Image (tube, rainbow, N blue to C red; front, side):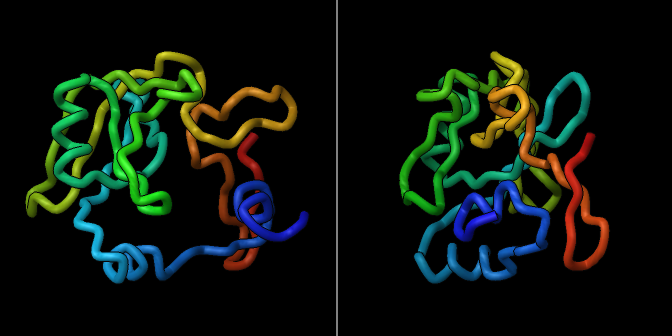
Length: 140
């Protein structure tokens, strides 16, 4: 695998970003983590972030809207890919510092990465399993 995002997204070497929260804080972004979960299967699809605008837009549109911490902009999931996540409900944790968006997929996909075998967007972002502290394996 070559370097960059492709190695992180498709590689089998562990490259965890332990400074993600630090980067968000240093950038001054005021967000809470959002777990996106398939409302029917219970599968965790991915983890995103919401600022107040994304949270309110999610409730108004009844589909997942997040804050892209890397692009520093509002992100309506599926606006360009078609992989919209329709909102079933929003839950808040006990300390009110994270959210759970229970959603239904408009298509089979949800991740921005694609399965190399099918060329389709993956149904979720957790498609690899840790096999040792330094290595991953694709979930079959």
